[in-house]
Image (cartoon, rainbow, N blue to C red):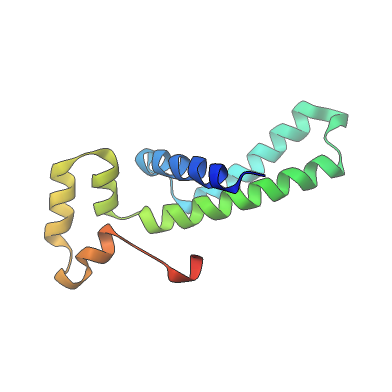
Length: 112
């Protein structure tokens, strides 16, 4: 068990998926596809125990990904993540003054 490593890797995964334009609603169909491939590929080796273990892993990954994608899915974050200064400046310019800090640094104290 290495939760620090898991969440560090998950953070990098979220950043890459923000760059790809992935939205959190894509995660459920993706999970279904992954499990379908496991079942088809592994055949008899895909038993109840394996399925339950992978469901637990997917639940953690999908929950973390959804949270990151939802918090990071704004135009300011996209500009920062992509390194596109012009996109970031445009996003800041159109954001309401009282929401600019929240757009750059979203936080959810309930997830801590």
